[in-house]
Length: 111
Image 1 (spheres, rainbow, N blue to C red):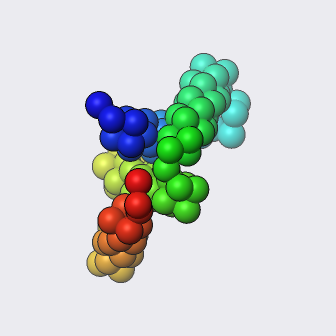
Image 2 (image 1 turned 90 degrees about the vertical axis):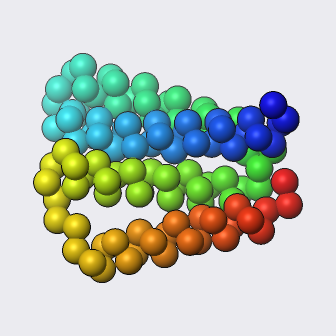
């Protein structure tokens, strides 16, 4: 794999780890549950580490925005699936706007 492709893969992993630590924050109940708290902190460190590696090759504006977008979209999906949060049309529309923005940044990236 080329360096750029590997960076995108690492960025995807970083974003998924961000979703994991968002779920961990919920499960830790305000860091009152030790095992969930440790898992959350481990996911945070791993996510930031992967983001840092991806930023060696990818532009800051693209990498950070994609990382946040993956985390946000994943958190919304997990909230709906696992916590039965509502999914009104406006939330779906907003998610589509985020996805469009992420794709636009990816396509505009020169790397």
